[in-house]
Length: 207
Image (cartoon, rainbow, N blue to C red; front, side, top):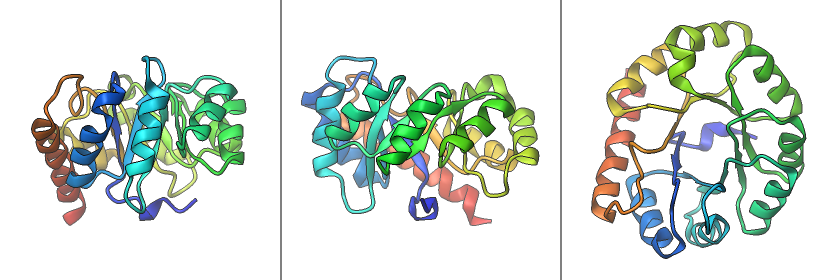
């Protein structure tokens, strides 16, 4: 899967999104330039939200599920229209199932062993989680041993003003949760937050 077309490579993590807010949240995020939306499954109504977002997604955008821990989660998200697997862990059976269904696979890893297992199972990008624990030095170490060009997406505590340091350490994208979406945020505020992240990402690529 060619991830170079995913620009910006920023995943909006919509934890706690309710179906009745899905379309307004999606419109704000897509309007600000986000093209990757994740709805974690460990909250009620996630599959319904995924289905709604998938139907309204513009060309080139991908909607998927997060906290996908079982093969059954992959099948349920795919049936709802989701085409992306995001997980906090590395379960090779889950990754392989999503890869077989043609989904973008971004499992969570925190060690080189997990990273190589994930890539071997078909992962397209590696969610570096929790990013605060791995740190800039840890990410640099990952990059020295992984295949050149492996997409590395830190998740956890990322803010617009820290993105440049992560990119300098080897990050090629990000997953963004509470600093972007919180239940009850207005569409206007969500759009403003999203625009700030997109602008910060573009600034890291400008030089």
